[in-house]
Amino acid sequence: MQASQPGRFVSEINVTPFVDVMLVMLIIFMVATPMMSEGLDVDLPQTKQVEVLPTESEHMTLTVRRDGAIFLDEYRVDDIEQLEGFLQSLVKEKNKSLFLQADKEVPYGVVVDVMGRIKAVGIEKLGVIAENVEMAAAAAKQASRSR
Image 1: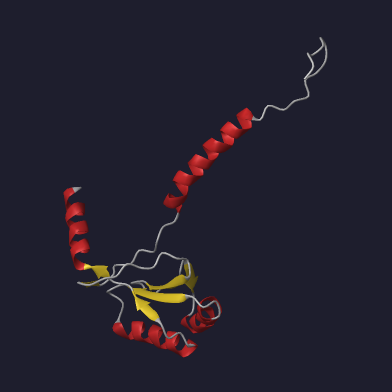
Image 2: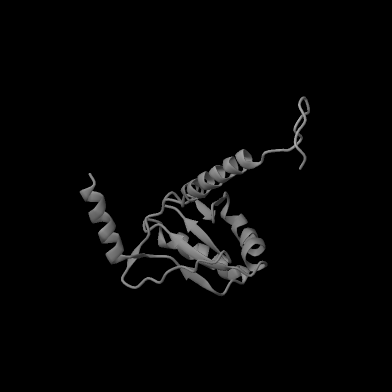
């Protein structure tokens, strides 16, 4: 580059401050994103043997809450009659796995009805989510200590 002459403008852009700001924003979003995804509040039944859910995104979770509300992942299903259509378009046609989690206070008949609708759509592989007894006891003990 030639030496700048007095009275001439420098036509170069300094990108260092821009890169600094973008890196700070990236770090902020990386820290904040996991905090933004909350699950649904469900009191799961407990069992002695529990396997870990697969971590790939090729599965969906059907949740039945204590108040009877039904969710497919985080999307509320307003009418149980619509459930089969959602299962057909979002799970069966996209060849995803389905896991069912129901609050332990949900009547057995409601859970059986939901499972029947899942079977009616043609979904053969259904996982049921439960909570490990030892982990639940440890969490309850930890919660009682923090009070």
